[in-house]
Length: 370
Image (cartoon, rainbow, N blue to C red; front, side, top):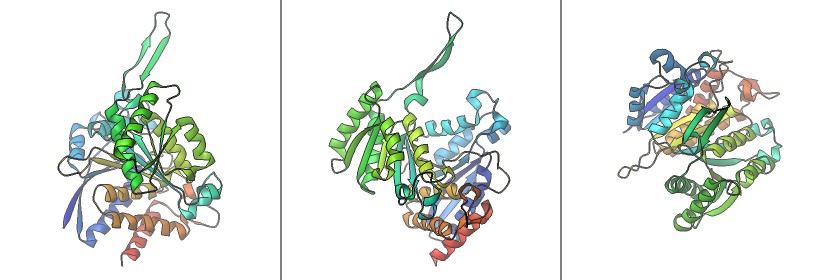
């Protein structure tokens, strides 16, 4: 029997409610046998700030490093709008990403057949959509130094954010993209702005060289990031894997997510480097939606993205692809049965709350496992 250690970080807002549904799925797999999950929970974000005065504690980071995977909920809300910048709820997530060196963010954009009409794009553009956006997560403008606001002699101010990338950072994220493409459609688009940014020039150069030496069997296309944004609306199914930097990845992945119908539907994975001896990676899995404080505590949240994030943990951290497929199929089956939370509600469908959607997915899992 294989044991997997999971750290559950529900965070704030609807993270508490959606994580509760993940715990039901974990209990189901524990009862199945073969694989056992040992879980531990801790505070992060606003909840950690209220309890400890910081967005994440040193002990929580240590637990994350010791776990096989971290399952993350959501952080933030108006309650903490005036928290010190360094201790804002989002700083907890950023520290986890940085301290665990989670440099590769995997953001799938999948349009379930039952939700093709929920997209703001025409059905023929999104039906069957399956894109993987690979975003570099620990470099670029979000972390580059200097990062400051200074007062000038005339009393005005100047703000500086520094976009910075090294050959090593670009090479390792490109390899992740090529490896994923080999298991998918074998095609990668590398998005940058080499026409106006020096980091874009280096990005294109390194991706080209990495492709030549590491993955010549994979089809590679270079695309300017702004054109990529346009093409995601014009013809999204032309893409298989998109690899890009931290800033452009933040924007493009949200755009691709909305093409599927709802941010509440999509999971993500943030992966570190493979260990030299074991091959295991530090990893954090989270839904791409926020804490949604306006509906928190009302039982209205869509738990699918958090459940699907656990499914990604099974696939990438636990070696349980068969069980991950079961979760994906259970979600698709429940949607095909017409169940919808409020964010994806459509005429003629049945609206349910958080626990009802979680229970329906669990019931479908039980049926698929018989």
